[in-house]
Structures are given as C-alpha cells and as structure tokens.
Image 1 (cartoon, rainbow, N blue to C red):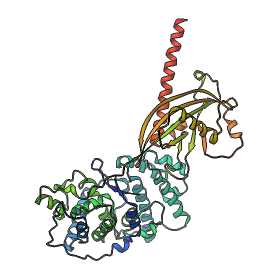
Image 2 (image 1 turned 180 degrees about the vertical axis):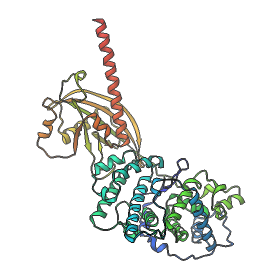
Image 3 (image 1 turned 120 degrees about the horizontal axis):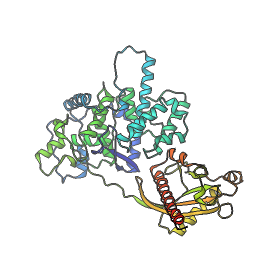
Image 4 (image 1 turned 90 degrees about the vertical axis):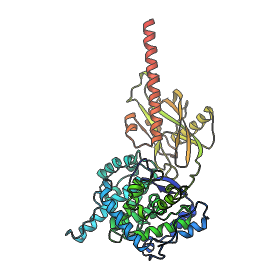
Length: 499
C-alpha cells in the first residue's frame, strides 16, 4: 500500500502532507509512468464552451472520461502566468528555497553551475524527504541542523545509520532517513554526479515519481511535472474532477494535466507554485477562493456559484483511510547496577540502562529501544513478564537469579501510540537488577549473539536519537523513580523523628 499525500490547512507548508491511500495497483501503475514522456504530450482537446458543471449524480465512468479533456491553450498560458506572478510575490521563505532562484547569464562557468545545481538537488532532496508526513515547523530546525552537520552529499555518505537516526529524532518514519543515507552512499560510491533526470533519480533508494520530478525540475530545470496531494487537489478543482484520486486511471490523468501546465522556462518555480497554492490557499477544508490567482479558471468554483448543492470542497472525492490495526507491546526498562543491592545507596554513575537494537528490516528498522515484545493480543502481567524474561535470557544472557538478582520490579503504567497503520497499546515496566561480578561479566560470556545491545548511563540515553514512543517510556520510568525516591525520603524522615 502506498501513501498519497495532501496538505493540511492547519499547518500550511510547501510540501507538508496529510495522508490518504492509494491502492497497490495504483502504485504499480505509478511506477510505469515515464514523466519525461508525459511532459511532452501535446495539448489535445480544447475545452472552450464545454459545460464543466458536474451534477453530484454523475456516473463514475463519465467523471473519468471527462478528465481526458486537457486545458485549453489559452487557459494554460493564463494559469502559468498567474501562478508564477503570485508565487513570486507570496512564496514562503523556507531555507531549502533560498538557493533556488535561477539567475540566467550571471557569468558563472559550466562547472560552477553544475556544482551549484548538485548542491541544490541535495538540499531539495533532504527537504522533500523530511517534509513527508511532517509539519513544516518541525522540519525547519531539523533541516538546518542536518545541513550544518552534512552540508553535501559526500559528507552524508560518510555518516553512520546511528548518527543519521539521532539527527532524525522527532521527525518519525525513520525508514526515510535510512533511504537518504543509502541513496547518498549509492550515488557517491558510483563515482557519478547527482542524478539529474527522472529516470536516473528513480533508481535511488526512496525516491519515487513525485520526489524525482521535484528534484529534476527544481534543481536541474527539467520540464517535468510533479503530482502530490496538493497538486491533485488544485487540478481536481480547476477541472471539476470528482473521480476517485486513488484509481489508477485517474492518477494517470492527473499526471497528464500536470505535465501540460509545466512552464517550459521556469519548470521548478511553476511546480512549486502549484504545490504552494494547495498548501496555503486551495486547502482541503477552507479554500480561500477570493484571493486565489487562478479562480477565474476554476471550474469547481464556477460550479458552486451555479448550483448551491455543489461546494468547491467536493473536489476531489474524499478517500476513506484504512482502519488501523491494534496490537500490544510490553516494554521493560532494565537498569543494572554492580553496587549495593540497597537502591537508596546506588549512585547514578553506578547504574546503566540496557538498550537493544531493532532488526534491520521492518517497522523502526535499526533503531535503539528498551527490551520490548510485541503481541497481537492482550496478555496479563504474568505472561508479559515471562516473555520479557525469555527475551533477556536469550538475547542478553540476563537470567535471574542465576547471574543477577532482582532489586525491584514494578509496573509503571501504559499508553497508546499511533503509527500510520497501527494503534499500539504499550505497557511499561521497570526492572532493577544487581550483578555481583559487574556488567563486564556479561561481555565475557561466550554464546551466539542474537541481538545488538549496549549499556548506557542516563545522560547518554537522554542524548540519544530515540523515537517519541521510546522517549515517553524513559520519561515515565524516570518520573516513577523520582516518586519512589521522594516517598522513601519521606518515610526515612518519619523514622528518624520516631527514633
């Protein structure tokens, strides 16, 4: 299943998306589209004089057939000019755009121009990936920090996955950061320049049709279209298309329409203007038609004025999101100390927290977390503890009371965490252990290593690039420990007074 994206009216941004779904068959068709070929389509039918009003009772096949009508030559020129003028005056000041203004005939030699284009392509690539399913406010800070650490593709290619994940903290969907790193390593190891065509860009891990079109047009001035949720919404309203936007034939025709409109002299700016319009004015629920630069060409607006039962927001058809599946997870924050078993006598420097690395494939691949077991159904405390004990024995060789003793074991609480397709109930437990021989004894033991793991002090855990769910688990345990410590302190003072 593939995510099809659209902007949120509450958080306007150039490439910020809210999700709707495209079927896997649509995705397969997406991959077959040659955007360079689409961009050269001639303007076929002239829609002058066509009645664009679509009654709500219209049949689906009539809606799709209606999409075959491209924009008239006159409307194409007007839309290009109006959008570019509006964009020049109203585009938001975003860090990845500040290098994007093309200056023709500025005296730069060919090599310098190529280097600047590649730098711009890298910047837009990073911004595009960060902005997928993430608010622009959250992205700007991360983007600036990313560029300070890895200003070029070559710098990024030398990074480790752990470094990239730490920098990505807070953005979610960590698979995206892994693709960025893999893509950078692939391009640099190939000894080639940054791919500058859609077909070449599509070979880079994580780059799909939309991102390829965006980079090719914005950084390399290729006359190719882009289609994201913003563009679909704008085009659907301009042409009064109420067909299902996830149907493969509908997707194909949106690419045709976008290809027809691309301005041949300023393809990157035009594509950004189309997306910017959807992000800021032509929003899903509250479009600002009075200030829209292309309202005179908007068939949806014209239909709404002619028929009170029709609204601009009827276009495109609303797609029902797939229902999240429910699962359950038990997480155990394990704190190990080689000091006294009396917890009140332990110091922060004595104790270490156990973290394990997730598998390299699947959800949250390669990220660090506290020992965790995921279940398809609810389990009681006894079963959850049994599963955690099995995990600790098998993967980290912790086996109380054989090689360690339990100081305390407490259920801390629970919370619900939502992924795009999963609603997960997470139970949090705190387990404090004492190792007689010290933590180094664990590393001396022979055996097959089935999981990457490490021990870190609290300060190191706090500075790691952990996911929001793992951070919440750690915060819950820290708060629990503080409450226990405060309670013990009060009890101690009471005993002193009685004595």
